Length: 364
Image (cartoon, rainbow, N blue to C red; front, side, top):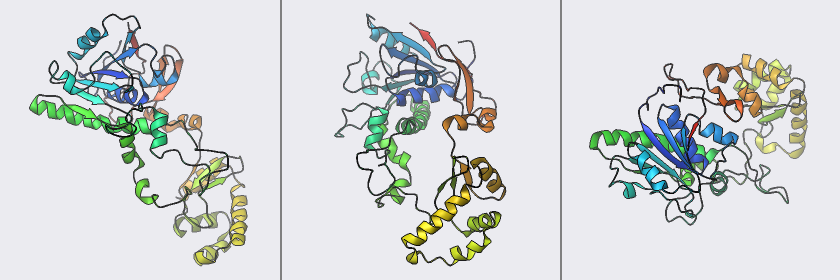
């Protein structure tokens, strides 16, 4: 492949059969840490070859392309698994594939193999037949909130979707340390094992404290203060997020903006006496205050005061910040289809381990 892989997993071989993002992302994480990942890619599977997702999630892998006329795919599979350490399986449970999928099916021939299955839902779940598709699992696990963030959605509108792969990413991140633990276990006892991480179940970890803090709430608003909001639109029509969790931040903000006379009102504020008229009055005054400066100005000046405020950036703006580029969190890859493109880089700090900026290679 034209470079020497360096990393904690250097020398380990991974076989991956993934039709969905979660398996592709897991294979990418292992490849980023130095593993040699061989992806067996049946024809016409997702993600589509040539798509941006395919270029990112399969970078640094060797692609073993099987066409529809391959006469003996099982032999190809066995040849590659024979000297492998890890086998990742992430396919539609309703589809028949010509390969064994679990450790129980493979242990007689390959007793040291670590098998990783990433189904959408666990066995015996009512949705166990549903594939590990990002949008299906996300819809089932509470990620998509009703629009707007209130007690009732706008009439005629449904859930608010997004393009971030929360479910797939959390499941891949959950599976990765489990693989390392299984490898340590194999070094002691000499045998592999089965690891199963349902994408749906991984989201219970992904939701974190939201399961506790928001479980009894009948709306999705960010509750912080009866008058002070979390998001404000600025002079340039951009938005900022501001955290006024106490007078510790509010007081220096009001002094900076020339409104020290407002401090006593907020110090003596009796929440029980806030009515719609008072709320509207203050909402209007504070909204107008934020429109006196641009979002960049607010971010810079409040940062100097130690007030937690940040501009709400687009993804393009976020990727072009100097920090991710200089730290290698965002890397430039010369993709054979898209040419120069930006991709997520290595998030683990290790000066001796750098992701090579190269795409995958094909093996027919």
